[in-house]
Length: 301
Image (cartoon, rainbow, N blue to C red):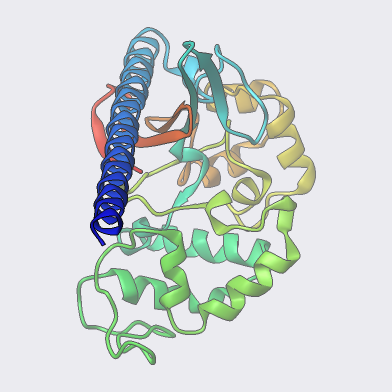
């Protein structure tokens, strides 16, 4: 009996020792993971801040140098601007997009011209543009219903009455979910997501940069731009000002007057995304900055 008891004690102590070792190993791995995440965060943060400095310095010297975001790093028509850095332990990818290549949905409550512009964009990508006032009623702060609008949500009882935080939020607005589903299936210009055309940041970008906007946004600037005129704009990029449009015979004076209600030639707001990887630990920082490098949004995931 004594022998059995001793064996039992030894087994218990062995099990406890294994458990302690296991807990110690788990704690060590956890601490190591935290350290790696912290290192990845600071590398990503440094990358974002360096990019902010770059934007500020280049905009000060020549705003047109930023017509396509960070063209001196690399430029791919219609895609993100990117830079890959390998520091050894940490690999970081930096992507920069000027936000004026997209239309800020939140701006439709500030200018009737922007409502008409959004209607033309939706029409170009095959969505029902008669529901645009429902978006406006969802965003604006008043209780007054617009024509074809809605201040009372069928599903939620009330509308948000505040700016949207994500383009995905359009799915919450009555009658839009099915429209968005159909749009994704069509893949206009190869895009299956509305954020290829639209922005949801709370900042209202007053102008669309014709040097970076895609065909849909260009064509939607007026109700009478031809495909040839859009080709002319794209082929002659970068366009510095309206004199360029005239001298290069891109558009006539009447069309230039029309597009300049919505269009500009440089960008003043930029989204920076830094993706830092340390072994299996990943940190992504997304920042929105203005031309002076000031931070307007900062998010970590």
